[in-house]
Structure formats: C-alpha cells, structure tokens
Amino acid sequence: MNSITHILEKSVAGERLTFDEGLALLQSHDLVAIGKAANAVTTRLHPEPYRTYNIDRNINYTNICTAVCDFCAFYRGPKEEGGWVLPREELLKKVEETVALGGDQILMQGGLHHEYKLEWYEELLQDIRSRFPTVNLHAFSPPELFHFTKLNGLSIKDVLQRLKAAGLGSIPGGGAEILVDRVRDEMTRGKVSTDDWLEVMRVWHEMGGHSSATMMFGHIETLEERIEHLERLRQVQDETGGFTAFICWTFQPDNTRMEHVSPSGSYEYLKTQAVARLYLDNIPSIQSSWVTQGLKIGQLAMLYGANDMGSLMIEENVVAEAGTVHYLTLDEIRDAIVEIGFEPRQRNVHYELMDPEHEKMAVEANRKWLADRQVKNVYELV
Image (cartoon, helix red, strand yellow):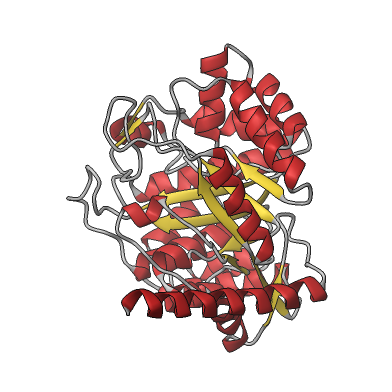
C-alpha cells in the first residue's frame, strides 16, 4: 500500500489530518493521488454543478513602505525615488470603471506609509462608500492594519472599529507569506509578526467580519514550515470561523533581492494547494492562483482542490512588478470552468451567487470593454 494512501483516505472521509500527516503529503511525490483526494474533498464540500469567480480590481493606493521585504519588487522606501500616492480622483475613477464592468468589490492595499494617520484612511473609505455604496471594500491587509496601530497609538480593535464604521467591508489575507517568525525575520524588516498577523484576523472575525487567508511559498521556508503556516490558520478558523477562502501562490523572484532563489514550478504549486485543501478542513473555499500560474495551470488547479477561479483582476501591480504578468478575459475564465465540466457563476465576497441578470450584464460589458481596448491599440500602432 502506498505510504500516503491511508492519509488520503482519512481526509476524503472527512477526518482531520495531523501535522505529521500533512507533512508526509508534502514530502510525497504522488501528485496524482494527492490531487484526486483534494478533488474528492472539494466535491464533498461543493457538490453544486457550478464553480465560481468574482470581478474586482486590485487598487494599490501607494507603493511607499517603511517595511523592507526582500521578496517584494513593488515597494519604495520613504526616501527612495519612484514613490507615489494615487490621487484620490484617479482612485475613484478606477472604482467607477470596475463597477461598469460588473464588479462589486475593490481589493485595496498599499505600502506601510510613514505619515498618514488613521483619519486619512477613514476619509478614503468614506469617499468610496459615498459614491459607490454597494461596492464591498476588501481592504488593508494585516501588515497595514497593524502598522495603523503603531502610527496612531491605538489598539487593533479600535482601528478596526473605526475603519468598519467608515466603510471597511472585509479584509484580504495579504502579507502572510509564511506564518513562521524564523522565515519572516530572515526576509522582512519592520513588518508584522506571525502572532500579530493572526491577532488582526482574530479580532476582525470576533467583530463579525470575514477575511481571506493566503500563503506565498517556494522561497526559504521548509516543508515543515508550510504545514506550520496551515496549522496556525486552521487553529484561528477553529476559534472564529471568519476565513472564507484560502489562496496560495509560488514566490516570484524577478526584480527582488531574492532573485537568486530558484522559482517553484507548477508541480509544487498544485501539490501544495491540494495539500492545503486536505489540511484546511474548516475553510470552505480554495481559490486558484491563475495570476501567477497562467491559464492552464490555473484551470488545472480547479481539479486540485480549488472551487473558485478567483478574480477577473482588472488590475494587478504587485506580482506584475516581479515580472509575472498573466491576464485573462472574463470569457477565458468562464470558458476554463466550462471545459472542466462546470457552470461558471459570478459570486460576491461571501461566496453568494450574483443575480443572473447582473452576471449577463457583466459578460457583455467586459466583451465591449475588451473590444474597445483592441480598437484603441490598433489606432495607437497606426
């Protein structure tokens, strides 16, 4: 009998895996067996005939950051050239374009700015909310939120209560990387610790909020540390139930201080995501990371534990700075879901399906937008 067969059978049956069992799966080379088990678990958790996606835009309001992350090609220090803060009207225009394309959410993140107090962020949320009251503001990752506590001398609960009152809807899981302090200390300076990252999420969940959880792997972490990351997330989810989804992706080394690290390939991505589906038995959804993996592996990930294709991602800047630029149209996302035997459905941040008429409008608006861009590009070439 394959040494991992009993572990896979246990997980498919709905039993919780131990740390050592999760590690054994990551150490295994039987990708097909692990993927089949992950797909079986996904089918048990999501027996419906559809698979989902959403439409949002990743708006980065500044690239100025006091933290130093060796893996990041996006940030600029406070005294470095190339730092910027997005003008408010330009930011609002981006939200308007997203709504016109059928989006109902803005993913808004930025660097750890050294000057802006909490009032600046409250005003930002209020400006967006006043003009676009139905748009969910999925904003400010735990490193940003923890930074706000330090800059303003406030508790994380006070910060979150004020931002929620200003319009914050949910929290993205950015800045997790690997939730092990040995790894974090070696490749970041001036950033949130593992315990503080988790505490931000814990407090938000206790306030009734939802968030996503992430993992960026394939750099200096060990396989044991990947499982430790998953274990810490699972523990918080046991306490709060506030994580709606988990997303993982491989480290993109280009243009970073860690260019010497050989990038992990699709094999390691698919295996790690599949193991995450088996280990995170209390997080309902797994998102494919086609943004870093491309269309075909992003599609294949839907058979390796994912039940969601993630976002159309009208705009993405952070991963793009590291040289990874994969773009999909809405039709390509929907076709990828159809090709693996499911109906494509648009959802919101709570994984509730959008109204079919809204979905139809979004498809037509995106086709027109894409056609207009193609015509514009032709004229530019002329």
